[in-house]
Length: 437
Image (cartoon, rainbow, N blue to C red):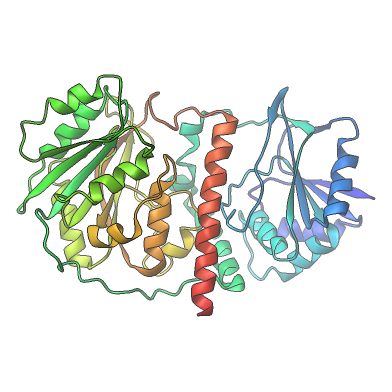
């Protein structure tokens, strides 16, 4: 089997791919997306091509070494729609399918052509992960996982994101997963609740930060009654003592979870189903603080004005001492009323802080997981219901060494990404089925 190699960056133009397609004249075409040297494990390239032939792969990629350290990647699935899905530097395409995909490209992109290529090829055959260490490369982005989280919403990357959204939207339309901007209406005023809003703070071992979060929540000024529900999941670092120091405040409700498994999603469910939970349940992570004393009022005003089942705000990235960090303010401008819920399948989050209409969340519930629970429930809401937006900065998202995603190893990063891809797969399947009905 013959193979021809082309070096091309992940952010490249449709014009460049047309040039490659015109030159490709072997059975397989290797696109190498790194700027660094590529070296093969002994017979690694031959093995990759053998698996490609045996599996009928439309495109194949493999585990590899980053320098001398193993760099495993994850399986591709129907919901692997992130434009930054990590294939490693080597992507090997069946040349006939590469040419067919490029020929079908009906939009000229400056940055998103590789994303367009891979989605189109995925419609023609499987994208196969060879989970064998077959080559060596050097990953040039050596930042910790927590520093990479916000690349996709960095305002400096806006032009790139606009193109990526166009590619994803076109793909969803081709496969029947696109949702028109039509929504179920909700009557947010129905039902009786003890208070209008509840600030929900789930926590576990956050002795350094939970006090700041609680003070921030209790100091809100509103023209309606609200409370603060703190759900502790068996902390053993002094967090419980900090929480109990606020128990004298009548607005505070303290829930101590039992010893069974709850995770963040389960802690949210405990708050939502508590009899004192308000009409709207508003997020405040135990690491973070509201930006000012008007956040809860702004949330409820947005629900009333926009008549939606969920509201997403805007936040500022800061260090532990509240000093702003790059990229600064995250406003998720890509969440547009007409296409936000489609673009949500491409990105890894829908923004924060989030507020929910409690009756709906009591029906849907959060998945009992410690990662991706917020993304899962937001996708589910967006399938049928309108999500409102607030573009004022609502809270400060503090990045520090104690964050659960601050510095994950490759196994943890892969596990998290695999789960979010699974969430997207389930959601995409549900949307396709809904459209067929």
